[in-house]
Length: 54
Image (cartoon, rainbow, N blue to C red):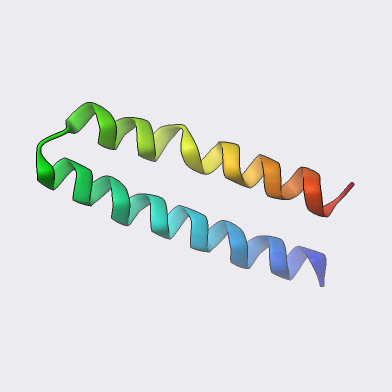
């Protein structure tokens, strides 16, 4: 059950990050979009993993 929850949360985090990054690119802030897409999802996924499988 934990694996399914982890996968669903990971998919949601990645989806939300991609959408937010695209909105940031559209607003003209390319560096912010790259930072959102490359830094935030791994940090959130690792945090979820640590908290769930502790």
